[in-house]
Image: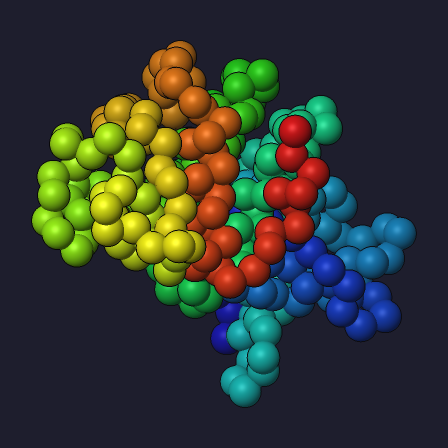
Length: 243
């Protein structure tokens, strides 16, 4: 059965002798893997359209009982390879790709995730020096969309309100907020500037968000990455290269 779809290429890896497995995030299928037959040939019908984060329109052939659909035809909508032009941009973008692939459920429509990725890419193309800021924006929205971000309002154990905390913490499983008295040995300290960051990121598109300055932005990033690692139970390889 032939079907069409639109979305973004994320990553590819070798399959059989001349084929590649392509990770895609699309309008109809969400995150899934397709086979690009003959994509490893020096000259092939896909050209450079399968490079990471290109926006494409595709024709897929889905055979009954086959593990992966076959990517038959690709039309390049938007070439986004220029946003990978610096080491920092490359590392942060590959981290975004790796997070989506490893923590997003497959074969479920991901309209919000697709809009988030599209907005981040569009903003970065116009503001290439803002990759760290946009990475933070992606992280907090990814965690919201996937339900990994806890409510920062009251201590889970004693009910103490966030506003009265001198310091507050995240439980080791990433699901609960704890005050200083109720924290446990493995609790993770939360940057005090996180509340303002959460409010602003929720109310602004990325093009406006990149102009706002926050206290302790590096600490906020590291904290959000800890939530990613807790929920993924993995170490995101690309994150080790971030400056």
